[in-house]
Image 1 (cartoon, rainbow, N blue to C red):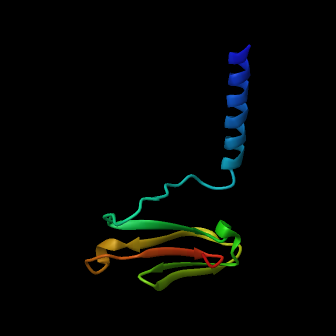
Image 2 (image 1 turned 135 degrees about the vertical axis):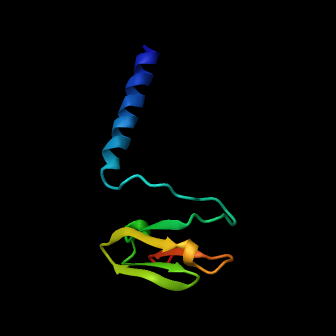
Length: 97
């Protein structure tokens, strides 16, 4: 009986997670601290829904490459191969964070 209860609970959790997946497309998020080597082209996802902000700003080295008011979401493509060699900082700011 305990096995059946566990299986039903696991199924319910999985169903709830799949139901939420329709709200946002799956994407990879790099949460690693420190530096990493960029690919030739980096796709930066943005959304005003993150942090509940009214405006989202995507910047590279402090220079805004995308600014949008709510509601907005999408991707910004950064061509790292065309950037100057060295370390670059990419940021996503929404709701002041």
